[in-house]
Image (cartoon, rainbow, N blue to C red; front, side, top):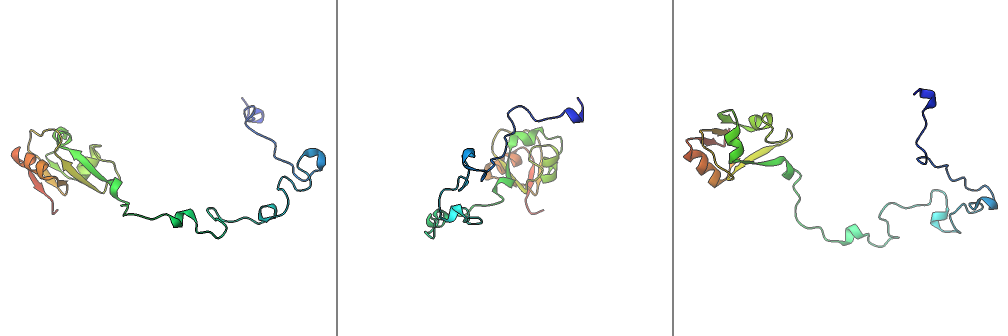
Length: 146
């Protein structure tokens, strides 16, 4: 294969419409734009969603509630995942390095799912009431303020 032999696959390219080239072409005179009106004229078009001055749909419909932009970056961590970690002091960085939470996570919260059989110290990672009780029952501690 040489560079001078390269060409697009069969049927992937179409010839451009040649408008205004006479009656026989099928796209002569008005060039497929019909007669008169805003759409027939050069530069005569309106913005997307414009409804001729009528209140646009996106402004007629009610907007409800609050959508958090950081919700997807707050991650839940199971107790069983903490049990498998090789470190005793667990913080957000340790969870990221272990691949339990994604690299762009802003916060993590341990939930009561599965069991934990060893002592861990949670630092800067939140925990639900049940998860905190399970960690403390296994001899661990939860430090939220750091």
